[in-house]
Image 1 (tube, rainbow, N blue to C red):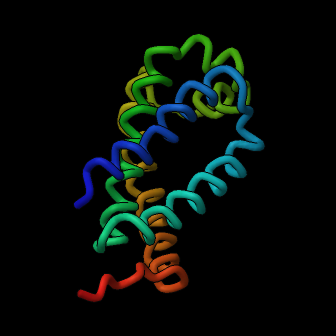
Image 2: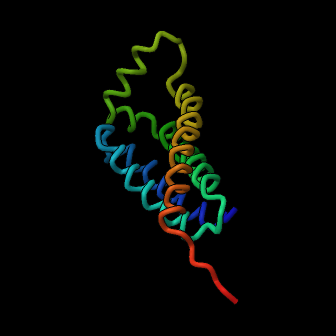
Image 3: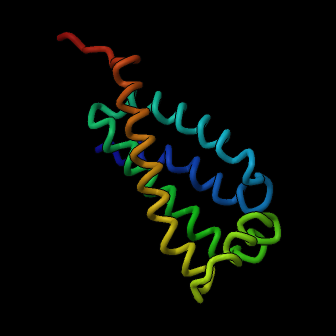
Length: 135
């Protein structure tokens, strides 16, 4: 595993963690993630050295840590800017603190998005193969 690449690409997740709290509304957030996933998939394919799916999975899991942490710590600002999520949480009949719900659902979402990014990275590795160094 290329840990340096994973940490560098996970910075997109850190940026999105803050941006989704304050600036990016839920209705256009998937477009940002699609662009990030495409860039990450290409860079994983070109720079990881292999294990493309695993790199994508780990990057998304790290992203989920950043995002979940930011949304929990900045909960009041997040909910103030995301009325739809607030309404969804209010409709849930389970008497659970919304922050706990975020803590549980964040890694699950990270796992599923990791599967998607891993798949994108695997496909990108077939489209953009790494050049072989012949010695």
